Structures are given as C-alpha cells and as structure tokens.
Amino acid sequence: MQRLKLDQDIRPMSEFRTGIASFLKQVHETKRPLVITQHGKGVAVLLDVSEYEAMQEKIELLQDIQTSIAQIDSDAGVGHNEAKEAILGRIKA
Image 1 (cartoon, rainbow, N blue to C red):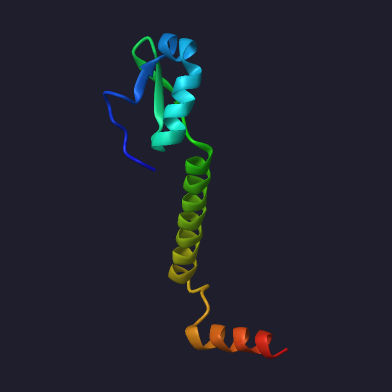
Image 2 (image 1 turned 135 degrees about the vertical axis):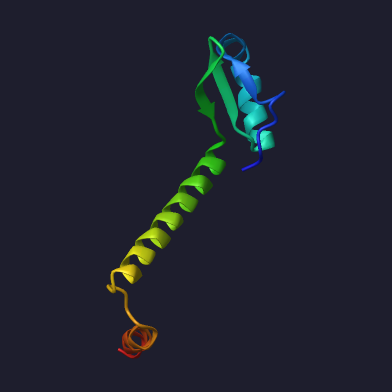
C-alpha cells in the first residue's frame, strides 16, 4: 500500500458525499487509502479491494510468525531433522 499524501488523501465527509465516484477512482488508481473526516476527526478509511486483501494476507502471515515464535519459546516446536523426516515420509507415501 502506498503512503498517504496528507494534502490529497484526507477529505471531509461533506466533500466525500458529493464526489464519491471520483474518490473511488482515486483510491483505485493510486492504491493509497483515503481518510474520511467528520468534524475534523478521522471516522473512516476507504481502501482499494486489492490493497485490503494484500493487507489481510500480511496480517495473517504475521500472526502465523507470532504463533511460531510462541511455540518455539515454549519448547512446543519441532526440530529441523524431525520436521524434515516427517515431510519426506509424507512425500514417499
């Protein structure tokens, strides 16, 4: 996902309501999120679908890594040789 450009990617709700189509086009073309404000405070973020999906995949990967680290720290992990034997056993079967 591209970084926000503060002068282009933060819009008030009133402006968003009147120009929804152009903002959807902007988000799709730039791949940058659009922050929508109400009374000067951020209330929503509009993302391109592909950028949202990519973000979700990254979150899932990071959660898997965190789980793996916790398993290793608690000695619940599987050693390299044991994992290798298990995988090779499955391939040969």
